[in-house]
Length: 560
Image 1 (cartoon, rainbow, N blue to C red):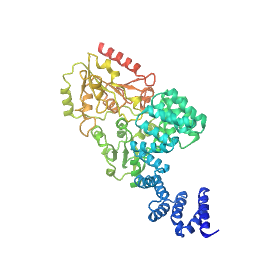
Image 2 (image 1 turned 60 degrees about the vertical axis):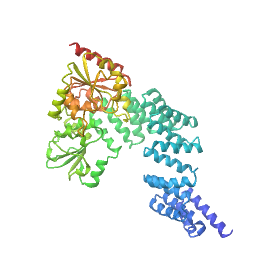
Image 3 (image 1 turned 45 degrees about the horizontal axis):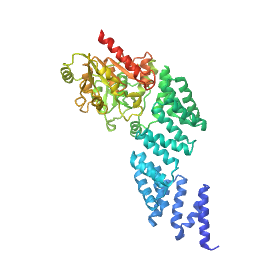
Image 4 (image 1 turned 90 degrees about the vertical axis):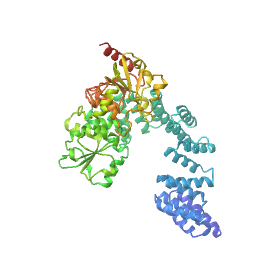
């Protein structure tokens, strides 16, 4: 055997060692081959692969760059650099090297697929779709490419194409758990519960330890108000994985529904282990404060962090005044809420760089749990909202011509909210109320949803102030004053429900079959808002019984 044949043989042996995960043996051979000009580039590349396999990414990047300096068109070097940067979430550099690998070889499936993944992750759906379709041009049965196309169509809310894609995967492989689970989630989101249960049950029949199916069966049964059954599925999921914080968080909602408030608040804290909170991260990085759990606050400074939506902040800001330490409390909130919250005994701040040195921090939605642990009850109604006198006079005068029973309505939430189908109500459902000759209807809708007034030809029936109210940075400034000038608000679950409830405005709240946990408590004789009356679906997705009740109750009021 001549020297060249020996080197080729050693190179092949090194590749076999890499496949067998005998990295040190592979490196020993490759380091020798690196000194031979003919093998230098490939030896550098596969030494880089060895470093990837031992999670020494910086060393791998250095070796792969050395290879590219010698030959910029080395496909495998560019590909591996692109994959390292992909793992590091450095998508700009990843795209650069993956594109180069694709340019060198336009049939490189790994490069094409990862370019699709990056574009999907950065929400560039059109580009992502293009790359996954390229994968399918080369291999029309690539299940991962098809799966990601399904995710893209789902994000585009193209339900038919989503179904078609997932069903195509299941024809190729009836046991594809991801496709079965995803089609189940689609059915769940569209309230097709029977089909969803079938999909998730099939997943479990294929793999008894497939955690997402147990979690999703828990959510389906919760929506159907089968709370004990839902709890069984969440418990099973947690049994399989003690770090399944999603199921633990979902369990908190079950406990709220069952009236087990103590466990509900305990499990509710798992939300913090699901989402990476940038506010908490900033505090941990820049201050030595600790998370507050009810310690004495005398002469101590505490930062309260807002979280989730405006409605949650509005509802639970009542707990700020309970802390009774007004000069030492700082509340980090969106500046748009400053107007509503200005009468709280607190220092409002709107950005992380305004946070002063402090002793404690805590999230606003943890305060109810700490309060409950101490008092064994929920803090009742607190009206901390004060309207602007001039704004109130303006709207009182502006609405003076409306002499009938004044009813405000709000029907459409954020269309991008995952569960919007369970919350928002098409305006046409309000038609009988809107056309009642004994009522003056005032719309509180702004932005998306307002177009339904014209679409349903309700312009002559609804007083639409969407282009006049809350136009500056002060959210709800006009809304508060208009609310004080109506007899009744009929609304979906939204921030305005919390504003009206805080103000003590008579409100009928129209809710899904299994609503948000705070309304579960409201129904269980725990009153957040005395002026809010819940009218709830009897069947998931069916608003007909809700509007029959609303119309009957209105007739009763008007007749008296």
